[in-house]
Length: 167
Image (cartoon, rainbow, N blue to C red; front, side, top):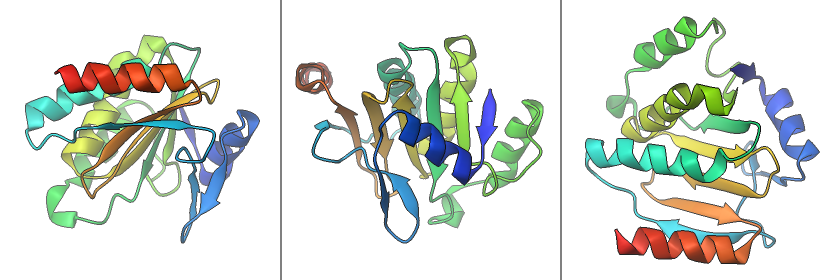
């Protein structure tokens, strides 16, 4: 796993033609016009959140690497325990703070760690982006409890919508 500073994750996105937008600070713009959106349910149950974390990662992990960007983690302080995430990152060799390195580039061999980042973000009600290495597929979920998958392939977005509606 590689940990990226804001400048590094922004460069990673731009290399993959993922647009950025400024909304108080810079964020990936996976809701831009060239992406098709599949709205996904945001489950209240912790077990369902872990299941969603696995499914979300599977949607963006079919390529060589995936960017997981943790964002806006201080909105609901009572819903989080930052030392847990800090110790997790330290176990992976990262000793800088989350604000210094909010980007996590993972490979398929690091699936368990990737799902852990996503699940923790869901459980702690943090914002999180997942972006495939091609920049074609992504997901986002918010501390405001909504979630979506975005793809440059309209048929894939429709398929994901169908799959999630069936469950």
